[in-house]
Image 1: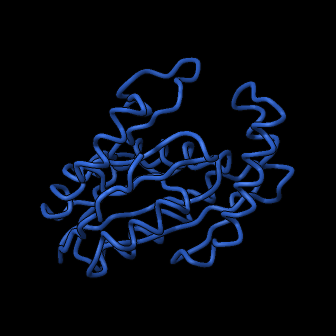
Image 2: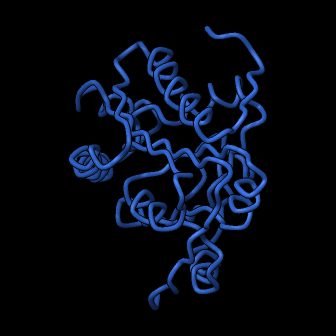
Length: 215
């Protein structure tokens, strides 16, 4: 693929974009699901991805599944706000239009990113409208166990994911906050992250209505 065009920044003094960052298997999906249960008025923008569907996944629920050709065409047309090629294989990226619309309407957008996505999002979300929170595993053995439990992976793929995780963990300090997801205590990690987000949202004047009580 030829180099993608430069991504233009979104300049807004309203709304808040929250990036939940961390390696594969650290619990980002579980924490995102807890947010979706509790804060239904937040905007949860799905990524497009070129990876194959896992068992039980449906298009438009976890991701929008697209071909490599379709994804790369969107890059050339400047349709993506951020993207990454994960594990040196699959593309993941979020379209610009729904995020820009939500922010300019003063809403909060919450989504998962990897560290590559953070590099781009820092260039595209401006004026204090970005909050990045890195989730760390308790240790690498816990992360390894979670990756294996998510589905059958080859030893080669497992090694590649753990190598990527080690690279991401070295850059955790580049995010605004770091929260450790201790084994068996994902609810506490969620509550820590929720508190950070609500504090930042209040400072931005973004109202986030809860739909349910805490745990």
